[in-house]
Image 1: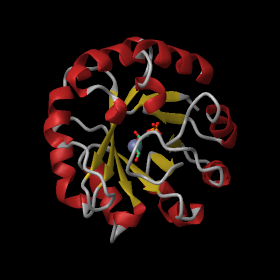
Image 2: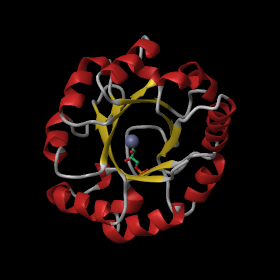
Image 3: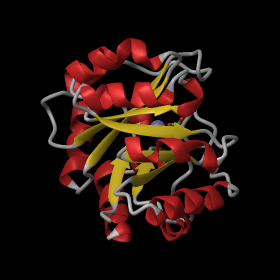
Length: 217
Ligand code: DX5
Ligand code: ZN
């Protein structure tokens, strides 16, 4: 299983977005994590399609789009059109998860399903065959720079164990509060895709990315 760093641009300096994306890419990050918030599914509003459209074609990194929006199905085609390669949707936002995840695959994107800290690991088990990635949120979605919720460690383990038990090739992504202190914990628990917002962008994005890419090697 490949370990992958996914810097989250939520904590980037938007006036220097192009420059900072190049820095994390040059330093070895393989995914660019893009947090879309609608002020409904989560209290905050971040950014959306026009910003992703500007990034499209300007980086080799995989565009890993994390939708924190209600009724995400309304926008699947639009996210595909602006270059989303992995599309993460929240289980809590889906009326018919199986259909929704199949739709993402049909459109040519990799489906990924996410669960909030209060949602049980077992709740994603029925969908493991339909996804390329499970995102276990390790903070309450909606904002960067929050503290890692310790009780999520067992959930990461439970999801990874079930994936292994079924012999599936599914990535386990973690998002929220990942830093120098918590990265080893989540890696040992079975995560292999690491989203990092403030840990990467609150310092020099190139140096920070390099440091974390080395840690997960
Ligand atoms: C939070 C977002 C995260 C956020 C993580 O809802 O999904 O991707 O950027 O930020 P950090 O790494 O600072 O906790
Ligand atoms: Zn995210």
